[in-house]
Length: 389
Image (cartoon, rainbow, N blue to C red):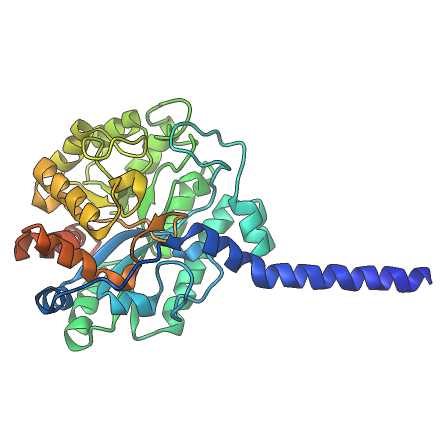
């Protein structure tokens, strides 16, 4: 009798685990990556024709975190390759998030908690990722390479100018060809060893975020507790990234860290996703004066699509945030940085980006401004900053 009870209990446990593995990742994503319900956006023939002619680049999405095939169109989340094609997105920069504190507020967080560990477990990530941040970065990079391989030749992984020009040429013949790039959101997965930067760069890492929601070995986060600038390890990472022709991402960095990076870096930086404190006064956004220093050093700011970045995150509101950025920094320093699939609520997914083009036309943006912001600025930046290949 006892044996039957034990076997029944074991069977129930296995069914529960299998049920959780099947359903929990999707339930989690549905609750965190939300596109607000809305009527279909009205896009004029003029706006659609212009949008279809753009080279659109988005500097930040966290889609690699989630348990779905980005090669298939999904009802979950905000980005996948089919929806990129529907929205005429030419390049998506995919970010690897490796640690995120519970609560995840914009005012203050410590590094003592982590929501990525349970997500990795329920999503079936390799056991090596359960306690290694480096393994999490490597796993998400491997996942992206596997996605590209499974969708070749319609997806091109970009790590050099040669790759970029191959994508540009391919899209002239077939607009369905899209590009993918890789970013780490915070350099804590280097685990204190700058040699890990070389290893990841050799496999395709191009953008190096320094911090995320908490202070780390490199220095202070915009949402941490110290407000610190670069540590000695942080300085070594920025220096090595420069030597490897990588681009540093200052999104989530403390103001002092941003100043330190600008003083140290021999290359322009990006802020992959965020907004302007003068336009949207939240703890997520940097002060306008510091943003001007980023632009003066040749940097680019990716304007976000969610409430803490733009305040009004409708297409019209995002367009107003973009206009504020152009007026503040100059046209060539503004780009798109959606933060799609980054546990944010948005008013549109990537398939609906023509609505943003329409909103900019409605607000009297010129065609040249729209082309620059939607991707032309990043295309120019990549041509200048990527290694030859």
